[in-house]
Amino acid sequence: MAPKKKVEEPKKVILGRPSNNLQIGIVGVPNVGKSSFFNTLSQTDLGKAANFPYATIDPEEARIPVPDERFDWLCQLYKPASKVPAFLTCVDIAGLTAGASTGAGLGNAFLSHVRSVDGIFQVVRAFDDAEVIHVEGDVDPCRDMQIISTELRLKDIEWVEKGLEQAKKNARSAGGVSLADKAKKEEVAIVEKILKHLVEDNKDVRKGNWSNKEVEVINGLNLLTAKPITYLVNLSERDFVRKKNKWLPKIKAWIDENNPGDSLIPFSVALEERLVRMTDEEKVAEAETLGLGKNASALGKITTAGYTSLDLIRYFTCGPDEVRAWTIRKGTKAPAAAGVIHSDFENKFICGEIMAYNDLKEHGTEALVKAAGKLRQQGKPYEVVDGDICYWKAGQ
Image 1 (tube, rainbow, N blue to C red):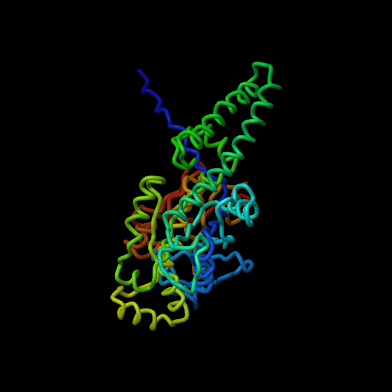
Image 2 (cartoon, rainbow, N blue to C red):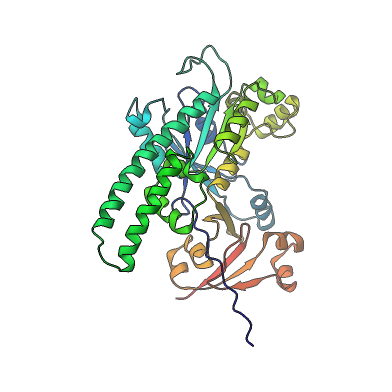
């Protein structure tokens, strides 16, 4: 009797744009340290100024290198003429105030800017400073988080209601029994489910348990609450160094209640502004003086968290001319991963010669990896793994 054919589970569709060129927006109410944070991010080289190319695309957008010890090690091994790390594109978005969803202040512009990014760094103020006024009169990070959560959700409800009207209109015109007509009727039920999740369940879309078909509808609507959020809590330098702040337990409790599973990273813009002006040696000395090991900055951790939240991974191409990290979405198959370098590599894809970073680190050279039988030829079905070192072969 022939063995049963293994049934492959359908690949999980990821929320968000199917792109490798994703952006993260810096969001918050006014005067919480957003622009100061962006400025330190866009001035920093994350400790690698001599090695990494850096570009500010315009005053509100910057490409920030993502720190990676694997990349550093590969550069030491190959000693290439050019070194290009993975980047995270960050966008500074103007402050949001209560009522933005109905157009108050710069509300509509703000929400359209949030809609154009793929993930959110939400900067939350947890420091007192009489010289920095708060738009709501006093410092209360939980209230600020609630304002933003409410405004994003209200705008999503408005968009989903419009989407439901359109879906119903499409379904009414679909009188037949074709697959296309059936799909239009199914879409109405899906959009109704999304609306219920937002209005009755009072939850962000990214916290729902959605099927692949439902995710495709959500991605078509491009909803604000479907975007991953990393909460960045801006502390005074003193509180950051001593790792204590009266608001931190309350902020953690708010996240656990409202958006469980979202990341929280404490940092201090005041400290980062000082560190960004220092040399590498001065930064290490300052960190040791403050009792924070050899690195007092949280910017590397923040950048890595943003990159990961977007389901981004990287593979490497290595040689004496260049070591380069290429950003792709988790689950990308070999031809599409090769296509990030050039579309011809995808269109005329033959195969990839792949080795794992850990195998190269263990054996020390490509020749020894090959001798150990760890250099693999992979075809079109192969899903590239974070840290793979790839050499692509394509037809003429």
